[in-house]
Image 1 (cartoon, rainbow, N blue to C red):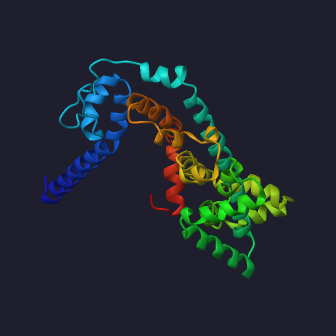
Image 2 (tube, rainbow, N blue to C red):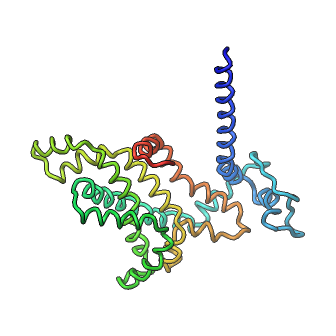
Image 3 (cartoon, rainbow, N blue to C red):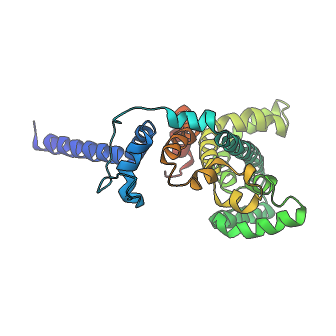
Length: 294
């Protein structure tokens, strides 16, 4: 074996070990959450009591945080309390679905339509509007919370789910991303369809949208995860606590209900994990094709 081949093999092994260590490091919180959800309440307090300052005469805790992958005694009590005994978790879960699904679907539909217009038709006015989109995209959403609140108050739906859904469906990032992709569609495809008698709506639905499939799936995953985890918008916009999503419910669980926290967190991660596993290949291809670095 030559010196160059030896050096290449050493570099590959080093990179493999480094990436393996990084993978374990990133997956450890997920694995610990799942394992801890099967522990008894007493064992959870013993393992994490030092971190939460729960030391008292009635609660026995370790002197330091104890990370364990195998419970001393497996129990499903937390899952029973989450899904059967307490109905609050299920209500909050469906509240998250009611907010995340309409925002995701409508945001992608509006973004596809707007991006087709930006990519298909030219003009100075189009360029100015697209520049405004880019400027708005650079602004953090925390900046727009107060204006959105004031507008929703003037329109009369302040304090309801619509105050979260309507501003959420007009996000600028999908428009920017879809426009970049649609500009790459060969004009020969569009002109050939027009010569065959297809209108703009048919060209959009049967040519532009199918060619953007991978990017659509990528944006769908990113938008859904962002909507599923949002906290500031529903906390500020929704007055009725019964309509608030699961993300806020998890942040308000008392430290004394650690078992419930772990079990609820596992169920909370399931929709995002399933979507990611289903669209992982499309996500990678879509981000690579769009030129966006992940």
